[in-house]
Image 1: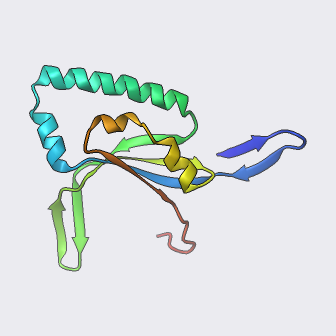
Image 2 (image 1 turned 30 degrees about the horizontal axis):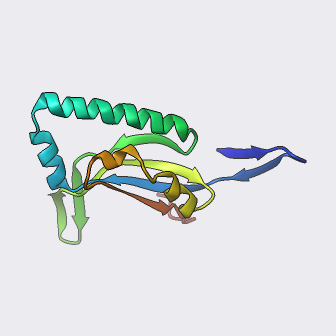
Length: 130
């Protein structure tokens, strides 16, 4: 997407893109899933409402947010099933990594006490397309 500013002339510029990883230790997620279903669902509903409010107040910052599924790790030795701490990912747009990271301070993801969010620039590598 493009950012338009008007006074005195319209300026067209591309926003930088950033990979956003929503993380929490796998052990914490196992504890979460072990909670009684009714209590967990109430917490999930509360977090979803907070997430929706945060998203509305940060419109345009990130596009699709998607869940990360089961991981396959590929090494020189082959392919193995592994668990990592990535729960969700998104692509955000902004002026700088510092500005985008600052926007995530106080995010509802921190309702998971051991959760964190990683933000990193996406650096296009010409010629690496398959």
